[in-house]
Image 1 (cartoon, protein in one colour):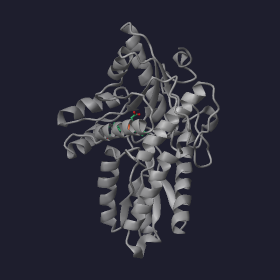
Image 2 (spheres, protein in one colour; image 1 turned 45 degrees about the vertical axis):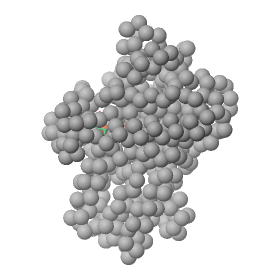
Image 3 (cartoon, protein in one colour; image 1 turned 90 degrees about the vertical axis):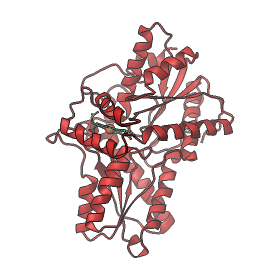
Image 4 (cartoon, helix red, strand yellow; image 1 turned 60 degrees about the horizontal axis):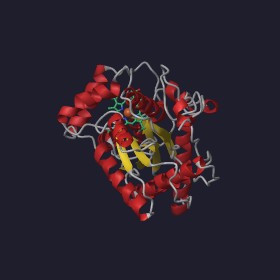
Length: 378
Ligand SMILES: CC1=C(CCC(=O)O)c2cc3nc(cc4[nH]c(cc5[nH]c(cc1n2)c(C)c5CCC(=O)O)c(CCC(=O)O)c4C)C(CCC(=O)O)=C3C
Ligand SMILES: [Fe+2]
């Protein structure tokens, strides 16, 4: 980790997230926000609405972000880093535009942005950059001064993100009955996305064969498998599988689905499995419903012992990793050569998304990338 403690040129950190409903009345308007112009079938929307109603219409994601904000502020205070931390969302209050307006009115002019999405993909990266561009355009129309916004690099392979997940896998394995533990499989899961979105994820040179999205997940899975082997002496068999498929059925999305995978494991005589949701930063609805409810029901029906390992959430190591990413980028912006922490084979991700990275279906302005003029002006 970098031992610099100077956040300059940054004068604030913005935690940028997805947002979620906070009660039954919020569910439909939230889903309308999420799916505006995205072509999701009505049937799928009704089904996803039911997932939220099953939990009182409350998404866990907002409280998880509040907990992460708390962890960040504590971590910054402990490290002697005096930098305000703000929070804004794409799809629900506090909305990104409102937060950014507040920050600018408070005099913030050089903002580091951390998204709650660890990997490259349109949904996890460029769409947030488009949201930033939209918010900046609104502020500009209101006659407010425009801050510079820099998005911190993807952190899927940062030790502060991966190490808590390794502990989580070891804890889940320990919970399995000894009679099945050594024969268990690890099922690494992430959000399915359309094959076309996967293939075009990340910089152009990574396009094809699942793109950076799949490569990055495979790299994290390999790091975890190796760490678990070192800790237990067992090289657990594993596979990267998917969940939370949306969209029209005739459009190919990444497969296999976790539930089909559990069926296959069971049919092959595998005695147990641990689901490892490496694609998710906290236990949001996809984890609570698609894994803990739906996949667990499938496991029960099969009689297959299955555990779901913990996401990173507000682990202090994750908060420290975010501080590290911020100080690393700050030093780089000041022209200092810095060490960039990364586990696995891929190395640290880029600071600035190159042109053509995770393209949208319909091109729109995006901030904080090589294709954004605002990324390079003060
Ligand atoms: C890659 C990825 C992440 C991971 C990266 C990240 O973490 O950001 C993510 C996160 C999230 N997705 C979320 C919720 C939803 N995503 C939807 C729809 C979609 N997601 C997609 C992809 C992703 N999504 C895609 C390709 C679609 C199809 C429509 C489109 O192309 O845009 C829909 C519409 C209904 C449905 O079809 O499921 C909902 C309600 C929530 C909040 C959960 C909570 O409330 O706790 C979170 C964190
Ligand atoms: Fe999603």
